[in-house]
Image (cartoon, rainbow, N blue to C red; front, side):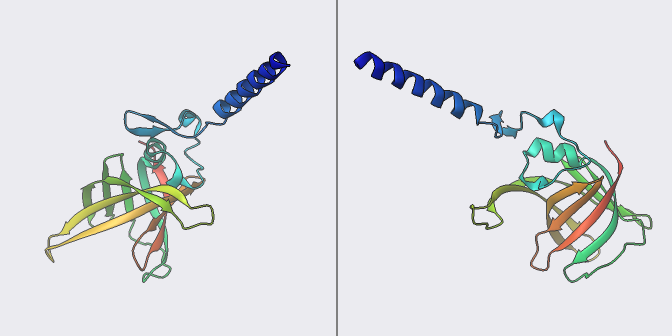
Amino acid sequence: MNLRFLLKTTVLLLLTGHFTACSSTKDVVNNGQEINPDESLVDIRNVKDLYSKSLPVIQKCMEGIWKLIRVSGGWDGGRIPNDGEYMILTSECIKIGNNSDGVIIDAPIIWEKIKKFLNEPNGGVDAYFLTYSFIDEIKNITYSDRLLPDYIINDTLVVWDLKMDGYFKYYIRIVKN
């Protein structure tokens, strides 16, 4: 009877260990960065809930040259840009400009993580957003922007400005770096 109990307990422990080991498909930590084991399989043209992916995946998906095609929400309401506004992103730098003035903003990016973003019944998700600051030399004022990468569908990136009067900007990918 003790042998039977010992055998059942051993099988139960082995099965429990097997199933808990197989269920750990979440991001793992490597050199302080979260890295998705399937990162090489990410389709950078279509990514739902981009903000909740690992930072290397977000950076990989957002790198490139993007043309602004629409702005909605906020004080801006809805508008279609007409002066060729664009954004050039690397993992460390953002450049924003237009056809008339060229590059207006050239700033380093600070990537930050929001814990339990979107207060959902399940507790929300951790999300990454990018922050950059720039100086308006004419007005001598420093501005900061915080953008949350929302999603990419068919090479259209949607970012959410996290201000009180936040808006959504829609960019189409022109060039992948």
